[in-house]
Image (cartoon, rainbow, N blue to C red; front, side, top):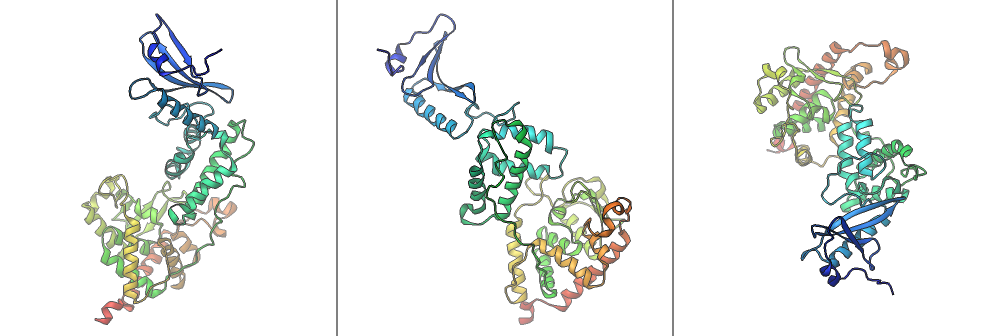
Amino acid sequence: MANKVGLTDARIAGLKAPASGQIEVADGIVTGLRLRMGASGTKTYILRKRVQGKWLNVTIGRHGPNFTLAHARRKARDLLVDVEQGKSIARKPGAKKKGSKGVGTVAELYETYLAQQIVGKKRSANEFDRVFRKYIEPELGDRLADSITRSDVSRFVEKIAFERGKETLTMARIVYRHLSTFYSWALTRLEHLPANPCRDAWRPKRSEPRDRVLSDREVAALWQAAVEDGYPFGHLVQMLILTAQRRGEVLDATCDEFDFKGKVWTVPGDRAKNGKANVVPLSAQALEVVTDIFAAAGIAPEDAHRQSQILLASKVTSTNSVSGLSKAWKRIRASVDEKLGYEAAHFTMHDIRRTVATGLQRIGIPLVVSEAVLNHQSGSAMAGVAGVYHRHQYTNEKREALALWGREVLLLVAKYPPQDSQEE
């Protein structure tokens, strides 16, 4: 009768090393588990498994007092479960998740996608890679790319949307969109996958566009709270109010983008959302805030053109902008409510941009000029053939508009003093 066990502790202990080459003894308990022994006498457990028509040999561990046959069987069973779930077992523990040629895991195929389709070709390359590394790779990176199903995507996106008991619907939509884009590219390389698994998978519905605009009293209170908070987050909020630029554009601004003589801040195209450089004239109020930021950062304005570092840089890593924004925003928002004397309706930093756009219209700035301030490429003036030849940047008009808005902000601050100061 054949030995159904194959491997036992006693048999392993009695094995003699071959004079040359190596021998293998198969286990009869766990299918695919084998003990390999070479001429040196070293005994190593391996798992041999056929996956998608190819034989994989995975080293499990070296036999010894701390890794016995029982340990090897337990680990082999875990790996076999991974195979059944579509996970890759080819990568050795601790190996870097770098790309490989051909079809493999999601993480391996992503490296090819990153090199061919993202880096140097998309302005959002860094953000795309950050989303993949933080959200997609930990959950799906080890799965074989052509084993992902629609239900896998649905469960994954739902987990992000409602993890830790709080809704993160926006991020869930972003992750879904990135994963779907990746699979649209990968589909031609995955002959065993009939369709993009993201198609018809669950994801949160797109939220209704926000229309929150701060009242004049709220603008005044926000400015006052920002002044009190100071460097760096108070200054950030002041710049948002005075320039109407996006939060990320202000946060990641580098010193050499500011021209103090010309009184302009140029947001380069590779940092602008629409890829178009935007010349932002600095009003007297904005120039004062920027000067204060430079002073706090210890950089002389005359040296701005020689400094490529981030102006609102992290104290830990100068190549990154300051951290702790969420906490600071909560602090500033609480201060706004104190100055108002009541709890204001919810508003976000991005609502500031909408508020400024509305304010510019209210003080008589033509729509085409306010759109230029916002660096929007919309409207009939920029459509079709006209957009090809319409190169006027409205720099002088923007300068006048932002100067009027800067004075308007200070008028609102004077008109609506903080409620707490009135009570005193």
